[in-house]
Length: 324
Ligand code: HEM
Image (cartoon, rainbow, N blue to C red; front, side):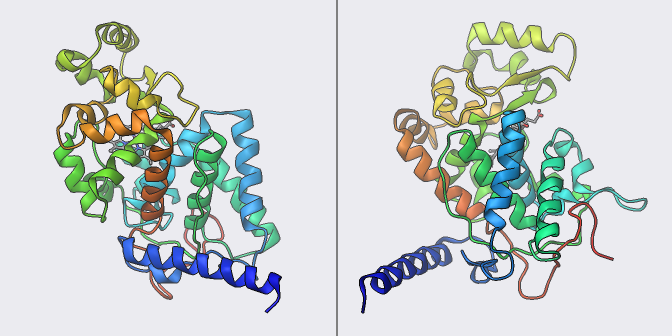
């Protein structure tokens, strides 16, 4: 065996080991359908095309990294990772994206641009669900977060119903115990949940989601921040504030803010207040490498929730509408 083929075999073994680890730790069905080389023959430049469009968009507007990460989360937690969050409402159906919890989602036009570029190169090949998973990964990377490999082969769903978001997405007033239970339904452990909440190292929230905390949780909210948020929200629910002071950088500042009682949502601060999760917050605040590692693990699992098996689902031509 030559050195080159030995090296190739080693790489293959490593990839297989990673996939096997995924099979053991994956939460939903359909894990076996995914592969790291899924579009290797049918659309070999998929990852480059996605990264190019994401990079352009984030260069113009760095706040989009947060929005692209959130899109993937809201896709996977409702009906699995099937791009149901991207479908537009129709005359006889209110889609997920028009549910209350999804009103502030952004980044749809970036996904449209990626899809258009891919359709030009290899029509009808790359699913919108895979685009979401790849775009979220690249968004994190571009915000200086960790890089992780994303196996591909997800299929797009045909159902998107606003009411499905109600029990599926965690509300901002959940405490640690409720968050742990909800995430456990998808196979996440406590550390996964805290690491994924670290997604709030990026982005902002609107007053409607934290005004009750400002009113009722003063014992766990830093006084200076309380005054500032009070002023922000005086004008109404549409005011907004960043989750942490470096909201376009993927870092550990979110966890440090929790330690200083400067968490924005109740569901953020509870992670430091609850004995079930406090030690994990402290560890992530102190050790960026460990947070990044745990976040990668969490994202890997999240990208595999309730995947469509076999021929179920489709490859949408336009991410906003089901194929006719
Ligand atoms: C743990 C339970 C979670 C709750 C209760 C929660 C809730 C929220 C809320 C209320 C907002 C603000 C919406 C607004 O006011 O516009 C938000 C924003 C955001 N969430 Fe979460 N979330 C959770 C978990 C996650 C996870 C797991 C991720 C990703 C891994 C994530 C990523 C984001 C990002 C990046 C934003 C900012 C979006 C932007 O600036 O456009 N969240 N979340």
